[in-house]
Image (tube, rainbow, N blue to C red):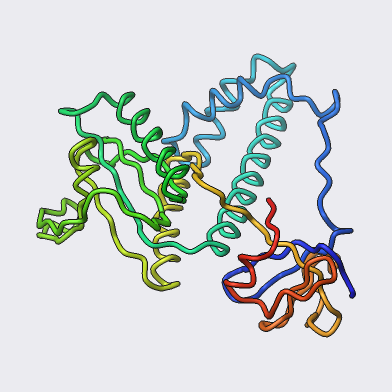
Length: 288
């Protein structure tokens, strides 16, 4: 066996393996790496989220310049922090897509805040608790984000969901779309309609539906810089031994990854599990 206990993910087209010897080692930051002005940067960064890129950098630099000996030091520090933010954003996207591609999805859901039923705080708290119970009791999984509508700033929660057991019933409802300015037919869940208000459950039937849903979700995450919310067991990788014959070629930086054959064989600690498939992956160990 060429490699044992490799981490494997699906990039949407191919299976990619990361050999055990190339696993990243997470190191605790040293005193020299500690950023004493990170809180001030984060505050200015949050306050300037509506500004264009160049103006945003100027705003943050002006907000922090009194901390440093001169403006050049402030600019250098701000650029370093902006680079850190950009790198972390890319890492979050990569992590998100690897999780998405390793799961099965059934619905793209939107839950809209209704001020006749909740305050914003109670809406968020109760929806979080409801989804938490559905994850533990009915096996739901989801990846989502909070978002405000551009015009009325009304709070929403968007997410892609795996729903093996539905609560309530789905009913077709005709309403008016403020985006397209025409009537539309949506599926509303009666349980969520009663306890939260307007909602929309769109079926995910194909890989194209999944990718379209993720792009829609990413648009809000990038635009409003909301954090991604995960629910349920959503591993990033599955673990398998890799045979030499199943390696197409090394890829990536310093050839640290392996492109695998589309029909590679999965092994668990030397024991044959099967040709890669959903059923085979379900039998293998998972990790993040």
